[in-house]
Image (tube, rainbow, N blue to C red; front, side, top):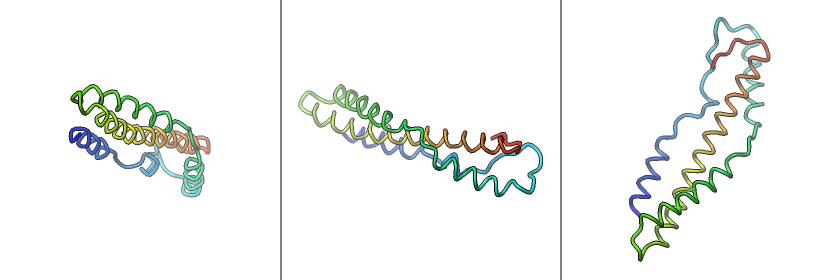
Length: 121
């Protein structure tokens, strides 16, 4: 069980800064409308919801339960499976959140490019 807790904590510790909060990289100069367009595009991206987090949580919980059940001693298989499912669910949620934020970053970049700004990342 301690192994699962350690793996879960390590997995959550690797989460970094949200992709949508990073500054935009621009090829060239920023025009006078850049600031207002960025505010509007960030609001648009924040409201975008790709709906993938639920699948990642479920997949993480299932794989965590399988791994927990396989690595446990025969007397602790239920406890190991439950701990694995909990850790897998947490890691699945973190993974789903990461992919949602990356999708929002793409929406932000596409919005800025659509408004004529030379955003490259």
